[in-house]
Length: 463
Image 1: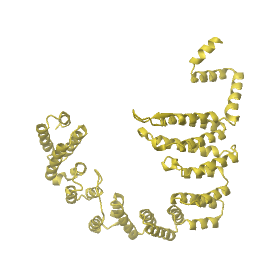
Image 2: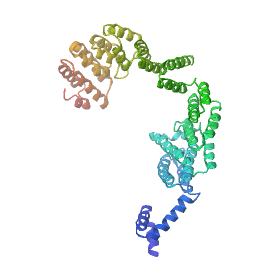
Image 3: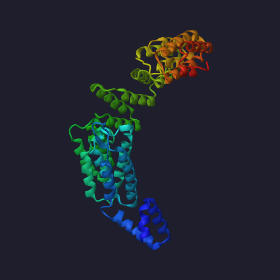
Image 4: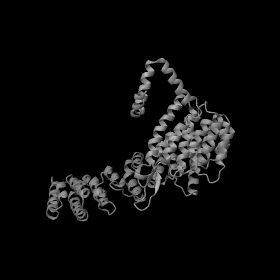
């Protein structure tokens, strides 16, 4: 016995687990007694969640100092919370899989309570905040699955619903870590009868200050329940009541399109556009839906009208450009495109430009060259991407501009990443006619002016 007492402190948990599993395979009596002990400990005991919850609470109690040498400032040690909550989640799911849904439910709910009680301003230290959203999502799934079990008493389910109802606009939601309103609906739907769920939804929708997105989610849930139970008149009344919400109206548009009632679909879409305008919101999504209907009805004139409007609204779009090019007669296309581009407030984004992409596809070298020489597009990034399309028509002008821009860039910037950028520009110059000669001349200039910049010399060594 003394030897066992001396050796036990050296044994790890995994050592003991492995021994028990191996011994249970060999000894039936031990297997039975161990099974009965563990079953009583984790499945039949009403307090089987207590130890796991205690582990979570201990983790949330851990702190770390983020102050300086003069002032201490302690906050929750979120690394510890992440580590422990991940392990506890695995254990809770094992409990659920073995049949103890009540314990899993208690653990999941406690995780949300503990998180909501914390100061979440310091979760994103070291850019590690995304783990919390993922962790809460997984705990939310566990909550839904466990509360749906018939083994959980309805009183316990109602208690969880009550707690979640108070957390719909909690700090967890405010910081964007978990959509508590959606989770509340999922948990409610899994634990309540349809009638109880309808009463709950009505209660939630009657609360002041509710966002339209929440209103729409509750309304759609209510409509779905009513329709599923054959309560058609009540469903229609609810639809009419909340048809001002885009999500509800889109659902009705989809239903109208599904039964090929395109006139009704267009009516719903037009009213949706009017509501959007009255509320000073974008009409883009409604125009996209309207275009889809006209594609189905093969109304060419309306397709052209909508594609043109959407092209302008999106400040240029290759998708609508391609669609319009198929719809417009080839003889009229050049004039149509020129007018369309003049109506569109188009911008360049870093190294990309839809207007330049269009000129490339149209093989319009003059307009592409003029665009690159324009102040909004006169950058190394733009030249790198588009200059080579003009090598047969404007190589000399582009090389001259390139050399001036690269020299200017080198005069204003020092450092490895900038030298790498210079090399990239010189590699792009090689794609132009006589570009090899120009790149060599540029390299010679740098060797003469910046010969002490060893990193730059290394970058341009191949030219």
